[in-house]
Image 1 (cartoon, rainbow, N blue to C red):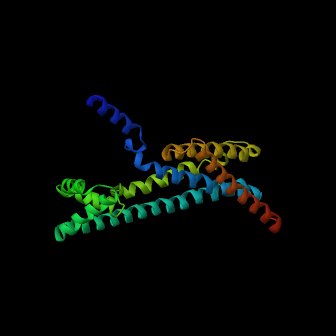
Image 2 (image 1 turned 90 degrees about the vertical axis):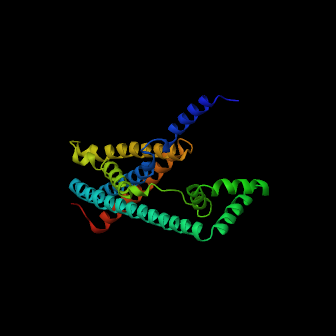
Image 3 (image 1 turned 120 degrees about the vertical axis):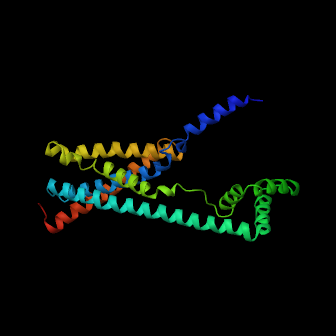
Length: 249
């Protein structure tokens, strides 16, 4: 049998290697969510403006407007979503606490039924039920997880979830328009934007693969494909509108 000290150390190392093992873990989803949309939507705007052969100043104006407005919309949307999850969790948690007080025998039977479906024998069921219901917090947490499929959300920080989403959108959304703000030659701006956006999309894709534990190149390739399709569609629309309206600003 393994030494307990060795097992404890191994467990700590394993937990530290998980995405949720760091204090920033709960916000990785927000970063990927905000960054991906920030890059794709802003790059689509840049592509559309280039397809329509509009002036570089239009890229900057429309790009900045998108980064600010869409970023705020996504951040506030994530904030409201996180707060709704928190409120729903707290409501059901309160109901479960009250049911344990009002109808404890029925709640105990629900515990038995949960673990009966998991294959526990009658004798084991009584032991499990007795152990779980001996601690009210464990009892309620078990009901929340097994009956309702809910776990404690990090939704006390709903505002921070929203801010992280907005910040990721802002930072990554600025990448496609950066060559139009920085001193880059006019003929090189769009090619530089394409290259920088590609690198950014691959980076976000790698982060997604790390979080989801999927194949390393699946996330980057999928996100790069989505970004390419959206940009190509926007560029094509820009070209069609340029030819239709004869636009050249």
